[in-house]
Length: 224
Ligand code: PMT
Image (tube, rainbow, N blue to C red; front, side, top):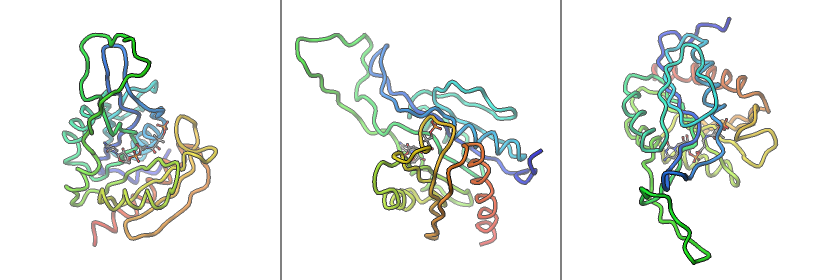
């Protein structure tokens, strides 16, 4: 049995991809399987937290004791997170949210024309994490960053721009890291500038390692 060291905390986790529909048949999305976010939700529930999971489309089953809110698009995820975040002491955003959606969703299937190219106009989605960062307060806010280059610089910029307490940086070019697999390799960057490299481990183990760190820093934050 896991230690019940998150009893009394309410944790909001996001997981999986979002889908941005082009027409009734097609969408833009990414390779997130949801495994990382589901592992965090499961670990937090096992440790006694009340857990709310906002998830895009995945093939995973809901962990025991977790309240699931299923969404499809980034705008639906935005609405669900804003609805559920207010009384949460910890928010972990492991979802891979589409930054853009088609500017116009067609009601009918888009037909092939005579041209060999087709241009899509895209519109920015709301940045959910940045909006939570503006609201901050006592809440401990954790983001993920998936990068293919300049991991540390890009992740640090996101930590600052989104006003986070901690960012979990995935190097998508590293073996055993990132999307879909059962393991991850991450670098943790804290608000005070501390950087910690974690070795490759299963997403379940990483979830517990993250919660250990969040828990000790959360109480530091409340007492600050
Ligand atoms: O799901 P798995 O297959 O297990 O893979 C795990 C993972 C690689 C998806 C996960 O570990 C991860 O890195 N998630 C974040 C991927 C990502 O979208 O990063 P980003 O750099 O685009 O976004 C940075 C942060 O802002 C993320 O916490 C994201 O949830 C958040 N964001 C981004 C855009 C947006 N419009 N709203 C957001 O809240």
